[in-house]
Length: 129
Image (cartoon, rainbow, N blue to C red; front, side, top):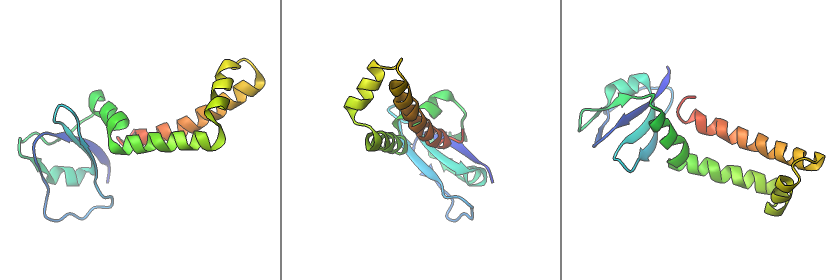
């Protein structure tokens, strides 16, 4: 069953039971009071909100919040920095930026870009992209 990003305000009202393949992922609430979750479609259809606005969303603002400000995204960002620091110190990274036209600088920056790309895929997966 496909999963979608859902958005709502107010309290979430979930079904008392649900048989699904994947557990829902709850991402939290933004500064405007919009809450987000990534659920199987059937689970989403069984949910409601106290403000009667529970719905699937493809809005870029919703996706941006989940992939940049949710706790899951922040954890992925921390893991990305840790992965980079496991291979390169800040000084090595800064040197690569200063010497980006050299073979060594290019190699370090390409490796860092690969690490960031892997973590970006994880963040995009939070919203089904």
